[in-house]
Structures are given as structure tokens and as C-alpha cells.
Amino acid sequence: MMKFYKIDHSVNSGDIKKFNFENQKVGVIAHIEDESGKILLQQRGLKSRDENGLYEDVGGSVENSDVDFKSAIIREMQEEMGNDANIKLFDSTGIYHCCKNNTNWIFVIFKGKYIDGNINIMEPEKCMGYKFFTYDEAINSKLVSESCKFLIKAINEDK
Image (cartoon, rainbow, N blue to C red; front, top):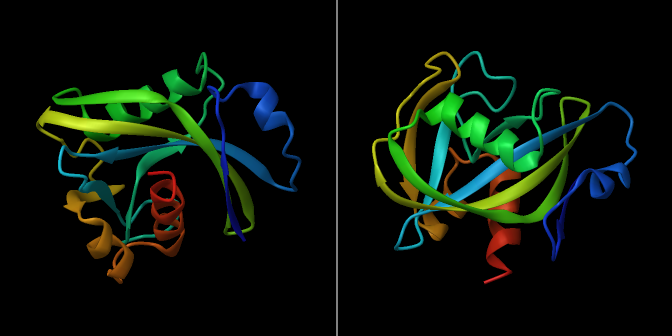
């Protein structure tokens, strides 16, 4: 099951408390596009939690030390891509619910714009590399996870 909830305000903990699923975890995702609208996706490594070898948006779990969801996605982006890429991060745009390996993930979604700079592989065991995809390439690729395709479609309905 996958569902996207568009939110017209910056997502807060009260929004997340409305979800009450068994085995629930909260995460953050950055949907990053370049100036031409190509989508930056990360190829998941062999030691990733799930979707090994497939492409997905950058993101991860919210940690207790994160002040808010925006600080969580900034931390995740730095952990995964380093600090050399210039990416403009916008406010959260929605909440995405999906179930993976019996875990109900509630993801806060942020949009980002890749400006310039190097995107580094900071966790080689969890990331095999990065690639920009056009919308059609991403939707039609067997290497992009089904959950990522769902999210890309949901975000693009908003354009």
C-alpha cells in the first residue's frame, strides 16, 4: 500500500501523530531535480535496509537527535552526499506512507533543486552511485523502485 498526502503547510509532529500504524517508523525524503527537471536518484547499495541495487530518492530515518524534519533531511543529505553539492531545499510538501518489509514508513517529503557541485558517495556500502533521470526514464526503468515511481508520479501531479 502506498499513499501520498499533499500538505499545504510545513509538516510538523502533529501531522505525523495522525498516523497510527503497527510497526511504524518516520523518515524523510528529498525529491531533488535539476534546472531541466531531471530527478536525482541514488542507487541503493548491498548493505541498504531495502531496495538493494535499485534507484530511490535520497533520505532516511528521523533520529531522536533531529530538531525537526528539515534538520533530519539536511543531516541525511550530508551523510549520503557530503557537502560539495549546492542544493536549494524547500519546505516539506507532503507525507508519503508505504509499507516495506512489514514496516509502515511515514516519510516527510521535501523538494530540492540541484544548483551545482559534486554529489559524493559518502556511504559506499549503502550507495552505489547517483544518476539524473528524466521523468519518463525514471517511470519506465526497471532499476527504479516501485515505491520511488509512485512518489515521483504523486509529486508530478502537483506541477
